[in-house]
Length: 398
Image 1 (cartoon, helix red, strand yellow):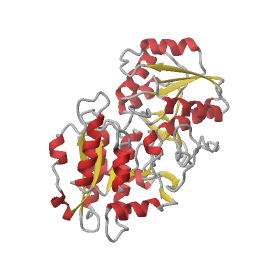
Image 2: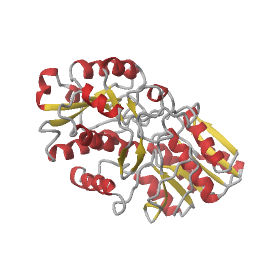
Image 3: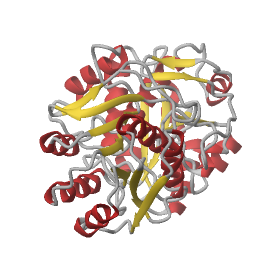
Image 4: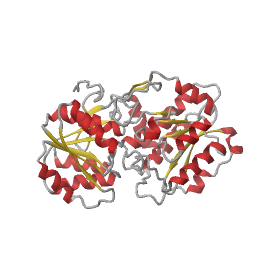
């Protein structure tokens, strides 16, 4: 995620229009608890629908379980049409008209942080890589994102023990680049070549040619959208690049998993959350909800870090809100700002009061750990239920 524009939370709900998603006034709110997504639903090359769809899956599951203290949960998505100015308009509308209790997911760029601070509205589980997120005391960061680049390269460095690595990223995507280099460094790898490509790139054959020419021992990277990552890896397969692949699951569609699995290329994947229903009850809840509320498999990226984060954000918001006698922006803010040991079985315990600066360009992300995994047999395999941290240089088990 770039500090300004490469947000993974580019949400789009193709089955819904902006008008239908935002047609709510303050008089509607007596029987609902509203939370808000600020997202480009149209006119944005980085918009994709899966995070919004996953949030709506969680909304349906929460309401089928009785809602929150007798009230329905409502996830409101506002279409910015890819225009930063519309972020301000959407945030003001959600705060002033929809009376949202929290923002969910997304990031705090383009004025959202300022409006949230002024209104005292928490951003629960933002993407956490934008400067506006990490400097915002009301951003409760739980998603790896750029810190995930460090976890991915750290895992790959310890697993394959390379001397030379290549990392592919969008031009100017400093948070991911610096964190990728940090992860490799902490794994003992300092010969890292970064190949930066324009975001509008569609022909990835020349990129793979550059990777091959560098003769690394491992390679990987992060580009957005999920379809572009798949295209990059398809170019690698087409050119028979057999060098071990190092990834995190920040951007990963089913087609990516199928491609890497079929290729048999050695790989490692740092997992933002435990993707094993047998080991992690929360992941089983996610899979069960997908089966019930997304039977047509409209969500193409069920393992993607941003998609699972937005699902988990809505799901855990409800769990935390149910602890409150009255759910308001103020009561939820006070509650979350004092959470020093927030946990689910798919997240390392988080201290939301922490202001650590262990991750370059992303303070407060040293809280976040990952699980070791790899792609095989048409799926992501979780190698160990013991999380690891590149920032803390913890050992990889399994």
